[in-house]
Length: 204
Image 1 (tube, one colour):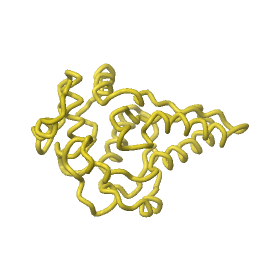
Image 2 (cartoon, rainbow, N blue to C red; image 1 turned 90 degrees about the vertical axis):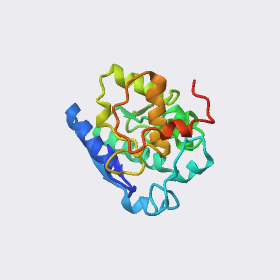
Image 3 (cartoon, rainbow, N blue to C red; image 1 turned 135 degrees about the vertical axis):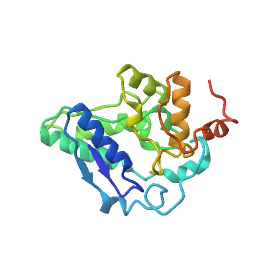
Image 4 (cartoon, rainbow, N blue to C red; image 1 turned 30 degrees about the vertical axis):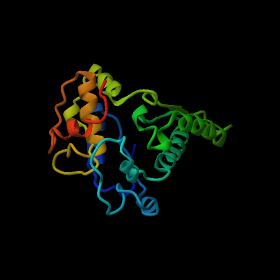
């Protein structure tokens, strides 16, 4: 399940659809554009420049879409309950905790409890968060173990012909492959920027 909330590009939706085709599973896009129009003030929804650099920089807070995951997960729980499914999975990960509050373990744990109350007596749906305590490098390693075609995945916030290599998601994507010791097949418009962005940040 993907969500169109009026984000600045549709690349992630197109790549998600292609992934579903590879896996031979259904793919549904939920139209959240009217809701997304009300969640203003983010570089992901408004005409605001996406900042370059590592997520550790204060400027990356401009990429927060308020309550986005809470809204999406609420819809996902409702759909899962209506379909008789027993779980909702989300790929929030440890690297996002300090900028995105709705990616933190405290949020996912509390949200799961809230949804169990909301569906009590109707459905038993749990929240699966395999990466909430893991880094992007851990995700790369897991992906490599599953033979993921990384060149057919998308991270970039800017949505150009190629991934920019400069925004927070690109910098951390490039760094994750480096830390995981896995070859990065991604074509970046600026493939070396991540090294500049991490000059003041120890890479271990």
